[in-house]
Length: 187
Image (cartoon, rainbow, N blue to C red; front, side):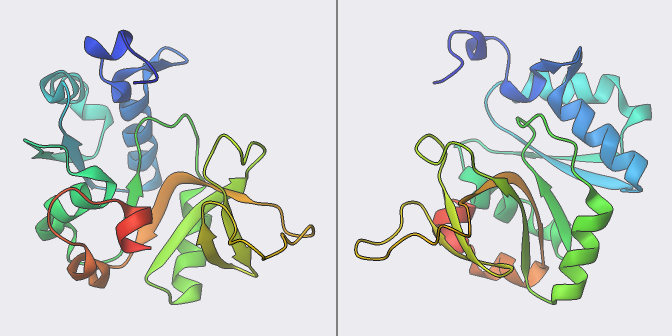
């Protein structure tokens, strides 16, 4: 909705950032990091996304496409690729964000924590516009507005989920079927 009418003919993952479509930039960065295979969810204008990525295959990891006839959401898309993702911890990267994550540091922190999910977050400078996350130490304790009666901790600014995380395959069984959200239905 935010980018209409442009998204009626160009899917958000193909929006150019520094003259390179976002999805292609993320996948090329993953390949440089050492990722040999990547899954790509396809829904709105999925044929365009697939064609663009296939046309640039030498620069990218080996691609596996997962089509969504009906939109499955952020968790449903992961569940749709469960067979592909079940062999070990995996990265999830929302392709419509223009960021350059430090994958090595993120994976290291994930392994050190031993937790099933590690989210890449940044300070949320606009918590009235973007869903704020609350934290205590290195744990996310809440999504959205603080509960009534609970005073915000002025020392800990709200955080913003970047759309990049590392998940353990054991979480796949906890994702309900159908359209689901990582934030609302898993975390």
